[in-house]
Length: 505
Ligand SMILES: [Fe+2]
Image (cartoon, helix red, strand yellow):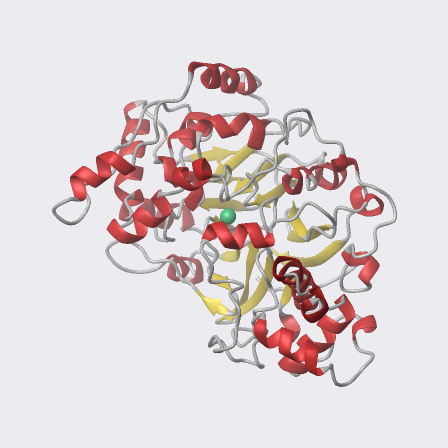
């Protein structure tokens, strides 16, 4: 399978102009009118912090998701579920939408919906890839953060869980997507106090009767909300097999899921992996450990498995790495900008895992730096020090990484000002290929979830959200990344920020 060499087409958008990035909005967007009852999502709320406590617990006491997933799968097996966990579709030509990290239920999630419907209302199904519900996958979040935002999408929606969906032990996810009720108890924790602490802390709590009734009402339309075989699954078509895996809280998979993954990966049919955690991100490889040995990426790279691409959520932006593997190229994609707060791209060094010329990201590093400089300016009340215009930010990124600006309006001055260079250092723009954090650097990526989310979540354009539309024919797979600016002029005609076509022959 060959990937076209000049495979990227951009039609307007952030790579062409500041207006295309959404910096100068002309008309208000429809998302400004939100349905009644939509609330601002805030990580400052004590209840939100308490409900996401299992993030800390899993890191201290060990990730319990492998053992708990086995219990969920055992429950499915008792129902005589097909062990192949496969949805069969007869059509060789089809299309689907892919949204990553959606579930905050606030304005930034709703902003994605009109452009998504404008571009993808005719698609055959949709996949939500990672973090369906923030902060903790709870069932009572589903009406406002999943069912209602996508109520106008008429085709089936499937999902794979992200780390946040596991913070309630996957209880809400299994109820909504797999029709399984009950709980999966985590295994005993390490240490003498482990069992006691587990009982005190890891308790999703029963869902209220009103919540169950409301979820049941939304789920009544089984054409749009069909039950999927399990937390991991495959969609098998005559031309392509899409394989969705559940990477739990910390990014690995259990040995039973790995055995299933090897089974569904066998054979000549081209395959596309959809994963909660990306295998390449921020210019580094994260191969994804398998319980007992081996990695997810080893399975993807195996030439007998014929993977053409691997798309992961978890990181809330878009990145694409066309990685040479033997005589092939596998497209490794990050697509987590489907609704939640934005992760910075300006901290990505000039790429080394692939040539920078083949790498794509959205937002552009300069736009990401400009956005963060404004946020830091507002937070510190030092906006005259921090704030960089998009053009200033693009120039200083170009200067530090030693490469030309992406769009022409950023490349006016060959040398950025001392202030711009200081802000770039403070906000973590690396020097060329350098990955190591600098002493002067302010926190941008390595912040606790609460502070990072607060810093990077905003309700005004440009949003820099993204979604994918994937078109499949008998001979080709095309992945298009659409940018969501939040501006009215882009709402029904969102810019295509990246496009790659892969031969399936
Ligand atoms: Fe996320």
